[in-house]
Image (cartoon, rainbow, N blue to C red):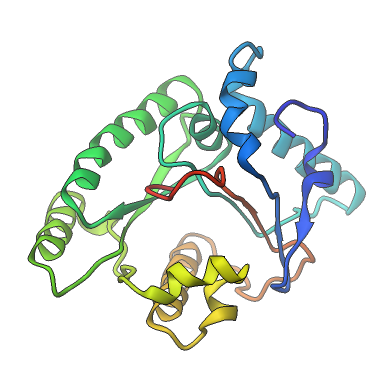
Length: 231
């Protein structure tokens, strides 16, 4: 899809969750940066693919948007794939593990976001910072959470995602946390986070919370060999 061989719409796959579609990937995505390095306009390939998808859907459906939300799940690196995702996005949610090195890496990520704002996408903005893998029993976790709130204030989501073994187990069964363990603390954290995000959107522009379209959400997963640090 990034190389233009397949249109965005054709790459979409259904999932077990109603109104949710995904663009899947595999280990081959790990080598994408090398293949894209010589492409003209390589930083905006994803933005162009999404823009084409939106325009084609709008023409065929009386101007209707193809999705309520499009989420890009970025790799824990600041390479070409992450730059593409930032250039294609309107907002950034930053997931920060409540540990010392993740806190230091946050400053580097903020520099990259500012660079993308200057060079590629002036309208890009950071909507929220999400503390994750938080363990209230650990002094370090409490200290890092306190530092985040001290430095970024209201930009830190009120709901943080705690450590929960069910979140780690769910992917091995090919299920979301809401399918695998809907009553777990991990599912509760993400459900409350989703409600917080929707309420933020409602403050800016009132809209129906219940999705009306067939493709309500699109997720582009990171490379399978990577583990999440930010998204």
